[in-house]
Length: 210
Image 1 (cartoon, helix red, strand yellow):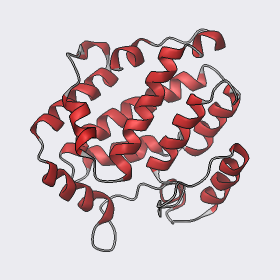
Image 2: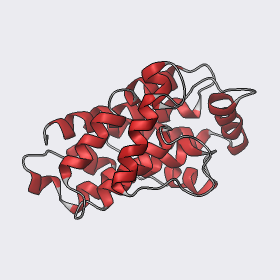
Image 3: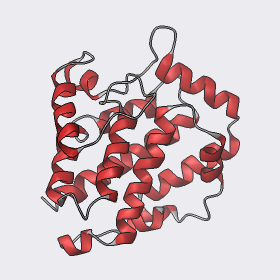
């Protein structure tokens, strides 16, 4: 997956729709969602541990895969659970607030959430059962992008670009930078590095298609 993402060079909309490239993008969003929605499942960590050899000279995304792999190999499951709690839950609140509204306005449940809900309703994307966080949680937005990519035959590319530029690009990079520098981050420092590299990649990629 990392090699595919590192090598994507978009020259036309036809090239953009190549199945392998889009599967790689969707998979990256799904992985980030799985790591950020809840404490990572053992299967998710094993997936990272099972990543093959990576050529880190290919760029930041490749380096991000390697860092997550090495972090997963050395991290203890219970330690990661404690880390997740400290970062995102806490006693009252975690060290970080992974919500778009918080980053854009300094408050939760502000105008960005209302605008996002309107767009999600138009796209037919509904809140998953059992999810209590608002729709602007970074994990939910990653899930939404994965869905848009997976249904690219039905959803125009311009819609995917607009959703990313309206709801993810303005703040996600700052969140992943904060995650890399969080005092409680150990395993998640590698997730922050990968996320920041992937957002940088996506921002450049989608800007060239709009």
